[in-house]
Image (cartoon, rainbow, N blue to C red; front, top):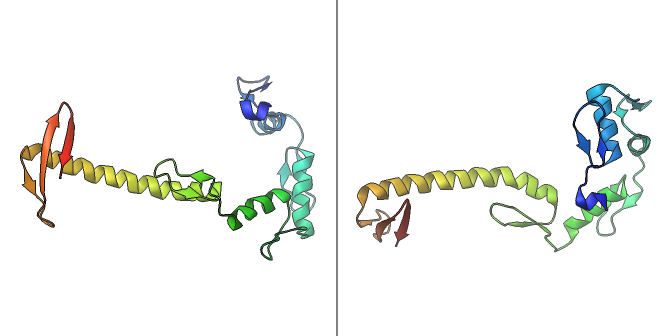
Length: 164
């Protein structure tokens, strides 16, 4: 229930930070206040906050990928990795870019797409802004150099409405 409401039940005794999950508080106490004990991997000396994270990590050192995709030959260490991969075989696109509404199968694909989309959108608004400034100066009909369509600008308050 707290996962969905994001209620922050765990608070730090040293500062004003609050956390939704106990593991988040433990991680904060170890990193920020040097309180608690790290769980160390005996193979690579990587440090973990809780025993479950360490156990999950040790599976990678064993090299056994016991979760096999039924649609292709790929194998995975964890069931969550397999579930994420199986979205690639589905036609359902559950995620969408917040800027252009382009649909994606995986959340990670949206995260990779978003910065490029934001750059294109900023470029588009810069070009549009330059065009609007140009049309404000004209204040009368002008024809396009490429297609000879007539463009007129009507000033309404602080907005320009383009009529083609």
